[in-house]
Length: 105
Image (cartoon, rainbow, N blue to C red; front, side, top):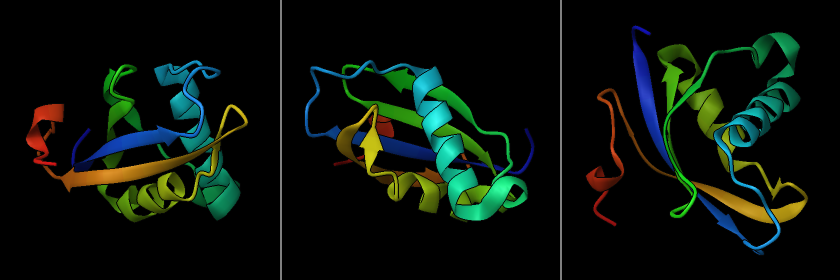
């Protein structure tokens, strides 16, 4: 994918015991949020989870450059994951591929 940006995202859950964290569920939730906020056409994009850690509840997303702001908005406005209250926090964005070690938090 050319002209992409990477987003390092952390998921904070109210109850970590009752959810199943998988890249498929996370990707689906983000795509649903995009479509809900920007409509079927405006929310249609390809995004890839290039790295995922269920233990850290983190993921690295690769998003086309023209959809970075929409993706960031859609991710941060997600309030529930599998019906559990949650908050997605974008820790860092970069034009270079990120790794979990890249964030000095």
